[in-house]
Length: 364
Ligand SMILES: Nc1ncnc2c1ncn2[C@@H]1O[C@H](COP(=O)(O)OP(=O)(O)OP(=O)(O)O)[C@@H](O)[C@H]1O
Image 1 (cartoon, rainbow, N blue to C red):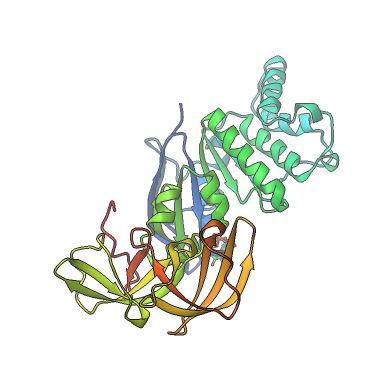
Image 2 (cartoon, rainbow, N blue to C red):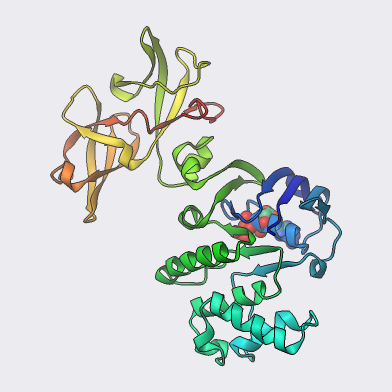
């Protein structure tokens, strides 16, 4: 049975320096939960508190109903995979995997069948007699994963496990990890600073900044409806353009640069006339138009990428934006061309300029 992890108002201090101050979240049984944030935001610190490498200065971490704050690492029944593999160079694949089991007093026959099963799960059985220096980075990480899983842990923790691999292998391994995790069904906490990796692999993501959770949600929710400007800018590419709220008889509008206004049906009821806002517009949420009342700008750079074309455009306000257009919609626009842009009103996100919190109604 998979377990839940409840993190309740935890505090982490390194001497006088408080890195995490009252953070709470729940990880559901069997899910792949990712802690995502920029370097130094406290993801690794939190992961090490869960496994027990770090002390906890306040609050509680529970596995199901059991508080684990003071339980030593080796009694927590958790497996961990690190960035740098941490497998033993003098041992074969099989011996490396067996290492995890030796401390557990498993009899020889059961031990071998468990190792074989694990090598199959991570698809490394063809290399069972090789030493790590004969394996690729991806294969080494499969061994590390098998060694963490062979003890049947309740929780699997992964700290940037793919960051030492090249780009192609990273994509291959993240698919493999997702598949293996689903097959085994183990509650998994995954740490990365790579937003694409997080989107690809996670059931749910917690976006962190400076020790504080910014948003928790499914990848698509976090991407499509970020809670605040930090999340909008950290996940995917966001253009940020200024606007002002207007209210008309038929609803709320945001007026952008050049007086171009767009009706937005999903703003919260509390928006006020004249309220200054920041709109986050993904590159594909701009539309190049012949309508000269739309936002004006000039194409500084055109980058043809086959499937679509990226344009880097300076608006008359001086704001710089990146716009992506599908080839079939447009002929390629040469650099130096004056263009007009509209936004896709249902997709863009709008934040209060001062608080930087979303002004989109919940559930829209
Ligand atoms: N052992 C330590 N002693 C003192 N400060 C530490 C220690 N470990 C981490 N910190 C500090 O705690 C903060 C969070 O670090 P942490 O390593 O958890 O961040 P991170 O989000 O995992 O970043 P990265 O991806 O760079 O590892 C940083 O300011 C870091 O300097």
